[in-house]
Image (spheres, rainbow, N blue to C red):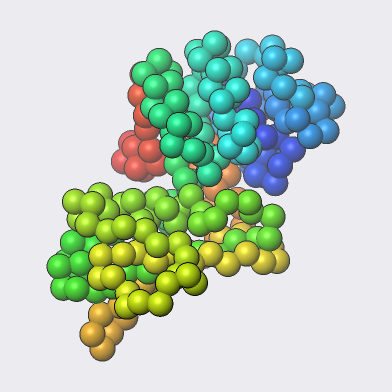
Length: 254
């Protein structure tokens, strides 16, 4: 059985992971960490206000918190030699570098989106993007999320853009705001649009617009459960791995 610590345990995703884990015989949540409403008993495990207060032995940490908590989380995992499933988005480039450095000492599963569907789309983009790019199709990315989400564009949208650049030798530059320019669209740009409102769990579309036709690849999440299930599968995968930086592609191909 995998012993799990949930970092960000009182958030929407933290609670969803705890709910899913309660019916998974391969996983036991031994503790949660969350600065909000910390140090109280929830269900069958304690929640602590900080990593310093958490002393439970565990096999892996699953993180759905905020970027400002990432530095301390990495220090905690390094100190305890704990594998980490890092799901928080909106990290700075400096923090991304810290993640890469930490992965030399502990296994880290880093993914902007834990759903199987999004990761399948990333695989599809590897195959079709070079062909459509060579044919001159314009590329746009649209994402929609709930009104509580604080980063824009989403980490998933950026990951989709990064995948497109990866398979086209860095051909494209990203454009996040066209309101201050009045000029024709550059053929080597990817435009990002972000919508925030209501309780939208998450929607992403990659639009390939060519002459007289448009190809759209889309994904819509109807429940946070898909992210929680992916995170738990990631936790099982990474618990006994060697140090390194892993992705959901590694989990899916395992």
